[in-house]
Image 1 (spheres, rainbow, N blue to C red):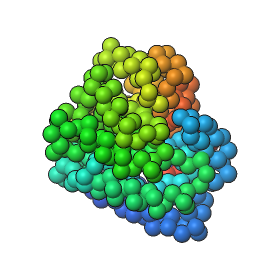
Image 2: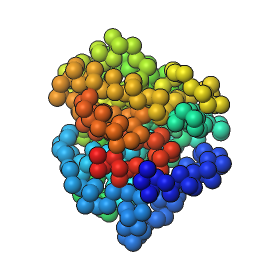
Image 3: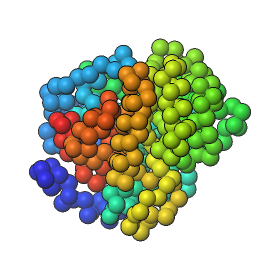
Image 4: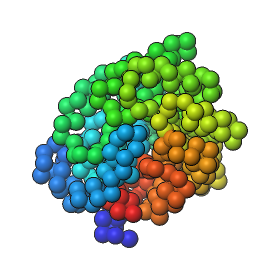
Length: 343
Ligand SMILES: Cc1cc2nc3c(=O)[nH]c(=O)nc-3n(C[C@H](O)[C@H](O)[C@H](O)COP(=O)(O)O)c2cc1C
């Protein structure tokens, strides 16, 4: 274990003694405050992350964008984009903010986030709590001039819970239009388990219509689709092939799962989506299958269970172009960013 990982492990029991959502907000505010001034950003890189030179030593061009490295932050960690320059200071190559909906909404009642510590996992049923697409757009417009070259900002978009099903395309289009000028790519989220009906949008014909609406609302912005890990094999194959034949730029594999593999932690039966270590095998398989099906026609972003440098290397070998971290940051701490970037 490195020095940074050991230091994080030392403070972890204090953090894990507090309510998970409270710690989450604390961590985000600390990152936001630390990154507000240049010396703070330098300190973050020095203490926790990949220093700027390491972070930019292996750039890659995908979807018409330059990524300074292949490691990103998955959606839902910084839904409202409050600490984007902090994530850059920690050495990531990209961040995906959101899910953002056209109108602000509070999400589900608390508690809605659980640690499954013995399993290296989380269960959440947040329900797209966010401040709305216009607020996010304003925040990103303010921070973009300060971001380093090659640091990519994706925006993950979704529907408001109370929007009638008949108006869902307009919801995604409104969110896309609001952030089009400040997003390097858009991620169309049709896979979160905590908004009723959302996953039905994965029906291939339905999905193609939805993507048309998004692309018309944000012409020229690359669009990727974030799929659920719970699709049947046949449905997965059909969607991947349709996306590759159409105008999408990529896919994110995958989101949290409603399945419950064997788990030991107390909160394993809480309702919501499971994330973290138990997802890794499934992510490796779906990345490999997708790469077989789509060849080089789509960018593949792995999301689910990556928790070490070795995991990132394995995902790359199966065909992932980019890898997102999320749950493992809670268990391993921000030092994981530097480790994976170097790998
Ligand atoms: C608390 C929490 C909130 C999340 N919110 C979102 C979200 O708003 N939109 C989304 O597309 N994914 C969301 N995710 C899913 C993550 O982006 C990621 O796909 C998933 O956690 C699997 O990756 P991991 O195992 O590395 O955590 C959320 C995950 C967690 C744990």
